[in-house]
Image 1 (cartoon, rainbow, N blue to C red):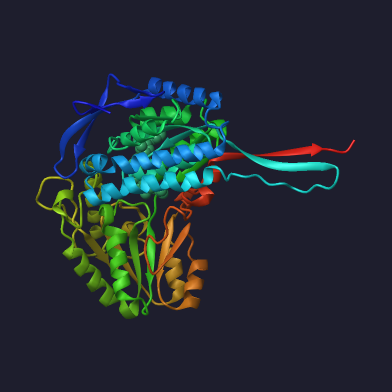
Image 2: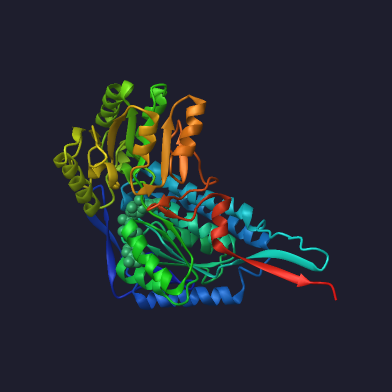
Amino acid sequence: MTQKNHWLNFINGQWLDSPQSIEVDDPATGQVFATIACADAEAVDQAVKAARACVDSGVLSDCRPVERAALLQGIAQEIRNLTDEAAPLLMQENGKSLADAKEEFVMAAKYFEYYAGMADKIEGKSIPLGKDYVDFTVYEPVGISAQIVPWNFPVDICARSLAPALAAGNAVVVKSPEISPLAMTWLVTACQRAGLPEGAFNLLCGYGHEAGAALVAHDDIDQIVFTGSVPTGKAILHSAAERAIPSVMELGGKSAAVVFPDADMDQLLSSVKWGIFFNAGQVCSAMSRLLVHRDIYAEVVERVTELAKSQQLGAAVEGADLTPVASGKQQQQVLAMCDQAVAEGARLLTGGQAPERDGYFVEATVFADVMPEMSIFRDEVFGPVIAITPFDTEEEAWALANGTDFGLVAGVFTHDLTRTMRATRALKAGQVFVNEWYAGGIETPFGGIKLSGFGREKGQEALYSYVNTKNIAIRVSK
Ligand code: NAD
């Protein structure tokens, strides 16, 4: 919702302004083009109260689940209807291409379609306890789901948690990111057009340390779903611990692809392009490390460097391969990590710089001969930067792949079936890709272990993060 390019928060079915606002710039030019109302702790409290009133009314939890399913299908259709109108805004505020911005809205619609299909199938169990009892379980909505969204895929990630939460009959308060908060407001529009009741979805933008902290510390929320960085996740977990409320944590990654000599080179290179240069590398599950068997190390290093050099930088509308990162702060952080890698002795083959042009661009960057003690091996960059390391034995490869504090995803490129199976057991991560990075989709559970977090989003499994199990045991004999 806009008034002269000033965007508002959505609380209890109303678009509301705030005295303060946050500026939104275009990463392709660095120019501010819009503002959004900046929510404070009072606005957060209003949103939680609206969500509580919605929960207490039973409007979503007490209806027949098949009606909730129809509502979610309606939201999906409305998202599809508004995609062409909404996607240019996501492109402008986030720096992604128009095609990728449209795809994000399509993904958002798919989450609603997928969880619409599950909304009326959240069935309990009957548990045999002998002739004296009848026992069964039911799944009840948790109540108010407080959700914090990052800026790299704001529309997709918002829908990823919102759709299963609504499917299970909850009310939701979402805190959007300070960078790239505008396009998410179109999800509100889709929900309104589909007839979602007031208070079921409240969306507010504000600073993390103010609105975000106020939301996760609010006494009346029933769960926290957080997607973002490890330090913020840890801070939020302290708030959750204060009231012992459940949380889903989708944090960062430093994921490795392990490449054996029998890998198909075309398959590998298209996965590298997609895995580290898509969305300018700002993907939590990016292929930020490549572990390559020494027999093909020189060839892979050369081919990946050629690939990186061929990536055309450009603003979305120019149809480029490599779009800008989302903010000046992110650009500076990526460049500083590249400088640090050089200082620690990693071999820079291409990139590592910002080109001479406006906007927050970073060149496609390849480091080779990266050793496990280097920061570029261990720390998440969140930019178009790949670190390549050689290995000699399978055991060494698994140890290198598992040798960081993260465990989000991992990959293996080989056509040896038994080695593939060993890889799927040896790699410590929430998801293992074989011969294609980012294989899977909305149907497959996603999430990490170790510092990458816990809980799962996507797939059937995610829905069960949004319900509580209740067991009912009835003595039937006299
Ligand atoms: P961030 O942690 O800085 O911010 C994420 C969100 O948390 C923002 O909305 C921010 O306002 C909010 N926030 C900040 N401080 C807060 C506080 N004290 N209390 C409550 N909320 C607070 O992360 P970012 O820079 O926006 O995103 C990048 C990170 O997110 C990367 O580490 C990336 O790997 C991770 N990420 C993970 C996934 C996943 O699914 N695992 C997906 C996308 C991004």
